[in-house]
Amino acid sequence: MHRSLLSRSSLALAGAMALLSSVSSTAQAPTPIGKVVYIHAGTLLDRPDAAPRGNSTLIVRDGKIEAIRDGFVAPEGGAKLVDLSKQFVLPGLIDMHVHIFNDDNKMRARIEQNNRDVEDSFVIGIDNARRTLEAGFTTLRDLGSDVHSVTALRDGINNGVLAGPTLYVAGRSISITSGHGDSSNNTNRDIAEMVHEHANNTCNGADDCRRAVRAQISQGADVIKFAATGGVNSNIAGGLNQQMFADEMKAIVDTAHMFGRKVAAHAHGNNGIKAALEAGVDSIEHGTYTDATTNALFKKRNAWFVPTMVAPHAALAQAQAGARSQNTLLKAQEAVASHAKNTAAAIKDGVKIAFGTDSGVGDHAKNAKEFALLVQAGMTPAAAIRSATLDAAALLGQEARIGSLAPGKDADIIAVGASPLEDVTRLENVNFVMRRGVVHKLDGQRQAFPPEQLSST
Image (cartoon, rainbow, N blue to C red; front, side):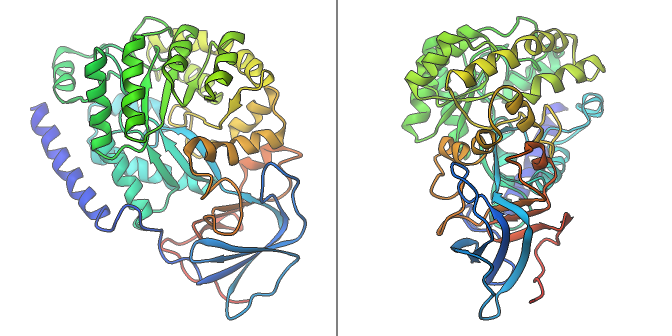
C-alpha cells in the first residue's frame, strides 16, 4: 500500500516537473516591468564593503543593472520610474541555509506527516518561496529537500512560472544509516522498510558515500550537503558528536568537487567539525562546538562558517511546546547553551562568516532575525549585511552575478525605510523587492505575478 502511494506521488510530481522544466532551467525570469527601469535611491549601499552613496539612480535593463549614476536622473525614452528617493537601497539578501518545503506550523506538520503527499509539500514550498522573496531574500541555498521537488521549484522560478528567490539546491542531505538525515529513525518497521528501499541519500562506507553523492548530482543538485555529526531535530538519541568516519567524509568531498559542486557539512560536535574541515568541505553549517583549534582550522582551510543562530532557539521552543520529540528537546537544550558563545569567539578569531538561518526549522520569511543575533555575537551591522551579500555570494561562487550592485550584475535590489547600518533590525521590514528586474514588492505591498507594467511618471 505504501509503495503504491509513493508511486502515484512520484508520477504526479514527474508531471509537475515536466511542466515547470518545459523551458531551459537556466532561463531568466519573465519579462521585467518595462524594458528599462530607473530607480531613484535616496541612499545606496551598492557595495556592502564600502560606505553608502547619497542620491543615486540605478538603470535596469532586461533584468540586469546597466548603470549607476549620481543624483536623480530623469527616465529617458519611455522608461519606467521606481521612486525610492526616501529609502535605503541595497543588494538583495542571500540566505545560505534553508529548507524551503518545511511547514512553519510544526505541530500541524507532526500530526499530518503521514497524511501528506509530495504534492502537499510542494504547495507549502511555493508559498514559502514567495514569502521569503518578499522578505528581501532574492537568493537561497536549500540544504535538504527531496531532490526532484526542489529542482522543479528551482526551475519553475527561473523559468518565470513561479515567484520566488533564485535557488541553489542540495537535494537530500547525505547521511549514514541512523545519522542525521536518515528519515527512518525511530519509525515503525513498515515505514522504515519503505524508506530504506527508496532512499538514495544514506550511505555506509566510502564507496557507498560516493554513490550517494552521484545520486543527488544525477538528479540536478547544485551543491552537496552531508551530516558529519548528529543533529538537533533528528529523532534519535546519541548527542551531537561525529557520526561519519573521516574516509566517508573525504569520499563525499572529493566526489562532489570532481563534479564541480561545493560541499556543506552539517556539524555540531567539535570532533565532527574538525574531521569535516580536514576532509576539505567548503562550509560548516551550525558549528555549535567550535573552539580556538577549529577556528584556526577554518582559516587554514579557507572554509566558511554558516552559524544559523536562530535555529537552536526555534527548535528548543518547538520541542518545549510538544511539536518535536524528546530526543530533540534534550539536544536543543545542549545546543542553545553553547552556540552563541562559541559563534562569538569564531567571529572574534576572524573566521569567515556567511549568513544562513536554517529557515524551515525557524519560520520562513523571518530570515532577517538572524542579523540581530550576529550583531549581538560581535559583528558590526555592516559586517552582518556583508555576510548576507558579498560573502554569501563568494561562498556560492556567484560574485559575478549577485552580492553587490554594479553594471552587468543581476538586478536583485531591495529597500528599507532607514539605514540598517545604524539599526540592523530594519532589515526585518523590507519595503521594496526586485529580483532580476521584476518588482515583487512595492511600497510594502505584494505585486501581481506575472508582473503588470508600472505606469510612467
